[in-house]
Amino acid sequence: MVFFVFQEDVKMSLEEAIRLVQIHERARQGRLRAKFMREIRQQEEREKRAALRGAPTLDPEVASIRIQKVCSGSCISSS
Figure 1 (cartoon, rainbow, N blue to C red):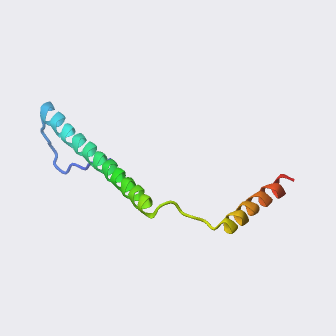
Figure 2: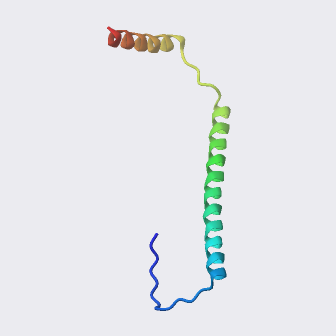
Figure 3: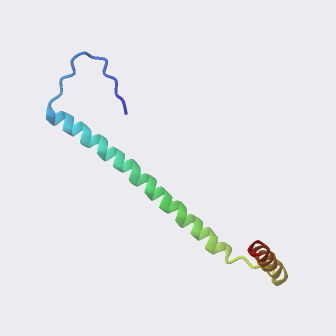
């Protein structure tokens, strides 16, 4: 990051500078933690919706056709 200072003389004690850096670092960590918690909540919501929908069921005939397609595709590429 680049910061531009438009004043010629900026006087700041070492303690003030440390305090400023600490405040900004805590804010950065807070934003990161909030993002992480938001992602966790979204994942839990997705899992909850998936559980409510239940396991997808597939017609046995459609399932067998899909399996045959995969097997024939892999057998052809192996040859």
